[in-house]
Image (cartoon, rainbow, N blue to C red):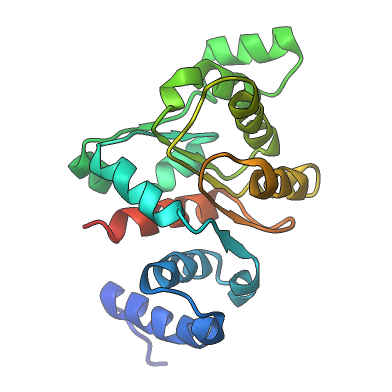
Length: 207
């Protein structure tokens, strides 16, 4: 069996295969890059029908990255999937507290998830940053609560928690109530690879 072995050629061919699924969506060039990265990461062309981009999301990310913003993640899988070397070229770093012992203790004491406790601990540090949530709906609910009840304002949010309990609802709330731009997907789809892919799309288009 003959198959492609060059990584660049594999990616280029993948994007060619994805392109027809986006043709009728009337996307701008940069929006196509976000959609394509997400579909490529998931292997699921149906994402073309599920992705929702706030009209100012890409511009907000561009401005934040140019300022050297940091990226705050709900789980290590999101943090690991982000191209930290490229982010560092802009002056930014990734952060995740899900494994921190103090966060685990706070979550137990308060009867909340570790992801919620981590978002609370980040607090005002997320101002002007990019928030990337790919696993925990409770993390997204918590960030939305903080924005509603405090002056917290990230530059933008990649909010794509996955699952059947709270995931769709948290993303619906993001789309209807967020005071800042966002990238999300509707329904139960999502996950850490999707969050990382969306962030990487934003990073790569700035190179």
